[in-house]
Length: 214
Length: 214
DNA sequence: CGGCTACTATGACAGCGGTCATAGGCGGTG
DNA sequence: CACCGCCTATGACCGCTGTCATAGTAGCCG
Image (cartoon, rainbow over all chains, first blue to last red; front, side):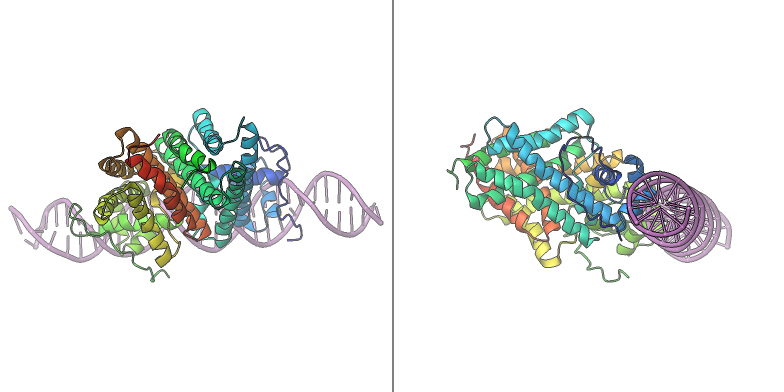
């Protein structure tokens, strides 16, 4: 209670795999990883400590709010991570188009599934399913994560010439399709749904950027 | 405690389903309802018996396979239910169009959320998140549920003039978007995402039915 | 040195959840 | 009546989980 570890934003200096930062960040990261796999309820505090190679005693020190706080921070981290990826995708695209951005977003998942298997899904989706009704604070954290993800996408669409009144709806459509396709891909253990939504949505997205839509 | 349970209307009695809802069917149905709300892990066997007003002793009698069997049957029921709704939606439409069908699918959720609150999501999604990695049989049940849902949608699209090679991809796109929008709607406690995907996807869906696509 | 703060280490506890074991009714049939 | 499938009823068990309580260590400061 004394220590105000109220989630200073992670610098995300290197948003890639090894968060070799402090034990606290490792635990948040590990929580997100475990939630991704089995959901919130199946993720035990002890498991998180083990996965993060952090002492169990540190849990109640860094997260006096208990599991609820840890889950909320994991969700927040995931939302910021997804949002930051958008900027990375943009720089990776030779010439930015809405369909190209969406393809990159989808590809992140197909790459993981094809290389590492279908063990994990989206931690934000998992937290929604498990906590939306039972834990108000987590529900709010999830909503914040979705907007932290949607906003950069919408902003990117605007920079590509999508009219302002359609950037946010299209971003929502992209993220909705992606989330749903992730579910189906995990269920089928096949990236088919992911590649399908990327392919089918592409013309609609690019049409919106050409101004000649509606 | 949970005496007030807002008894959800039983599946509209369908002629192809058993006429009398025995305790066994009530338990499967109740399991689906509870999974919809809090996920699989948060749904206890005792809770299911209480919600179904069924004796606890019947659980191990009707479901010797334990919770796994119960969850799998609940998922299967949900998939069949969703598939059957498609036929109902079609008859409800004055003149069937892809966007009209999708609007009906979405409307089922907006209606529920606006009238009964955002307590529940899709049980198939919940089972995917909670069990896809831990329980193989449930993962298969979820995959079967998705195909039991996708097939009627694809078939309906075919009947509306969508070329055969695109019916299944478009059905997948519809269901993906719907599932993702359900997640976002629950998180935000706002039907915005649902109405958005219905509106934004409509022109693409109808264009595919007009033959002039791609 | 003492004192203080940050962190770690463990053990205990209370609760719950799925499952098993056992036994009780209940409605037919012979 | 006995017999016997179906279903119901409970209580117990065991493992797990989040949390608390208490105690210990490390390192900086004065």
